[in-house]
Length: 180
Image 1: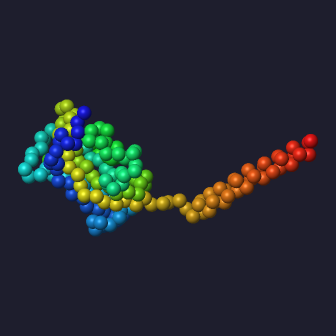
Image 2: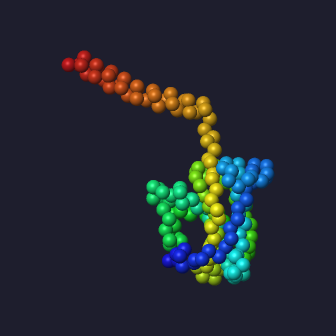
Image 3: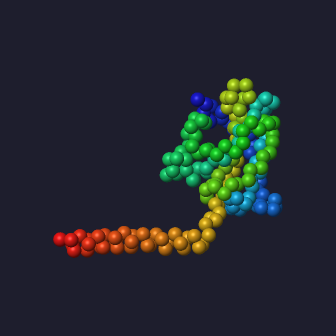
């Protein structure tokens, strides 16, 4: 089982840029909207390291450290294959491994949270992890696309349910009282 600490130091620079709905550039630090915006991931091997031409890249979206506290289902694990902090595989088998770019459209099911992108180099022959790099963090806000009318209907039905149940018990008790 390979660990992140066995791959230290991080050998990749991972830089992010952001695109809006009309491919306009969004300023870093702006909260991105799920199902609207995109993240452009650029990676390159740091100058003091080298990359094997046959390695491939696995790209993951990970929860930011402040968004895993008190959430055991997002818990960090030093063993790469067991790390729940990085559950979202964005792309696998990307080449070239030395440097590249990938644009990821944020789907509507991405929860509101802080994230960072992780690039992991995978040895093509054995499938072993060779090196990695992490980006800076960014924020995503999930768009709530539930219409107001549906919320109103849900609220009314939620209120009617308990009243109906109580009414049922009252009527049943009166009917049993008449039988005796």
